[in-house]
Length: 97
Image 1 (cartoon, helix red, strand yellow):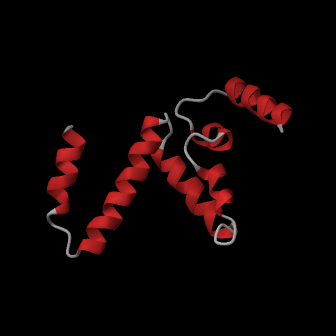
Image 2: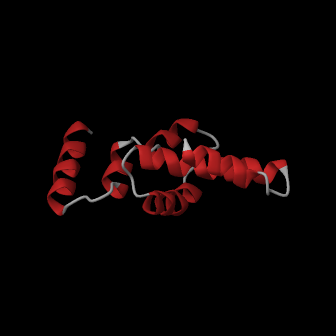
């Protein structure tokens, strides 16, 4: 509850409703990443590097692979992954593909 209250308080100082909405969107992405055991910084970096080069405007299902619970994102951005865990996950993904 504390993060919600702090975000609500900080939103009072937004210059516009669009700015407050943009901040809320970013906070939502970060909190969803944290809830899925992802490093928020790595996840945002992952999105910023890959989304501009994808063609999701014509095919919105492309965005599914960028959601925090997708296998690829979990492999790339999970908190405290070891080399062994990454290799096991990659093997599992290649078998199911």
